[in-house]
Length: 327
Ligand code: UT7
Image (tube, rainbow, N blue to C red; front, side):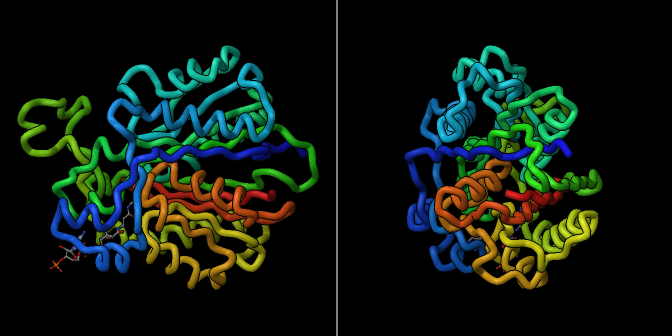
């Protein structure tokens, strides 16, 4: 059976960093609180003038170089992001131009922290249906641009970064993306949002004064729904494949909070060595978080040929998803 397979990964993190100690100087917080409640130690932050497409381009270049593939051979570029360079055009087009990927078509997807998974599902469909043979699937964010550094409940969590996978067709038996499940629920859009900057509430002076141009999050309410949703969708994708958590060699979850990841791992009975946690060094990079963790695991020898990998996500507001990949 023809499937889509991840043939390489790439990533880019901005040079500038923001530590918990730095944040102690900015808001009423502490390294101890942030570490205990989130697991985060440091975040990468884009410099002035460094756009989401710059991060995405460097991550894509890394993935292309690692696979020894020319950008002219790419058929499609999908960028998952909630922080596009501009409302128009799509960030993917800036990435296309920077890469010189003249033969590709490109567009963006917004599904918040599940964005990479949604993009992966679209790319998987393109490859399976012969619409594209080689697809760059990128998760890229400059969340620092929409983070309120006066709001301690959000500014300690979010960060910037980008990562990319190169997807190609494979006829290898039982390799590649085996299954994906996606969910959303529009009944909870108030749990996490940027109130202004869109058609409903454009960027006015009042919106800026109210700080409505930044992410507002009901963190604790979001947290309470996360573990069960991730467990449910993970069970769903696994059972469709006649699998269980016992068949999983590695879980690579969205990195929103170390306590969420540990809660899922405990319920799934997955030992520490089967769970990838990068939140300490990457923080929450929304759509970039899963591919960043995947790239980290790949480059650090955590993934073996033939491994069954479970990816799962939960994010605003609300989206959740899971995928099973055979490496
Ligand atoms: O990316 C996908 C979508 N997002 C998520 O999945 C995020 C899920 N939520 C979370 O990760 C957690 O809810 C947070 C890390 C955001 C917050 O942790 P929490 O344990 O849920 O804290 P809380 O909001 O219930 O607040 C507990 C206390 C409050 O103080 P009082 O009212 O008990 O005196 C907060 O004001 O902690 C306080 N607090 C802080 N204290 C020090 C909130 N943020 C901070 C902070 N430093 N940065």
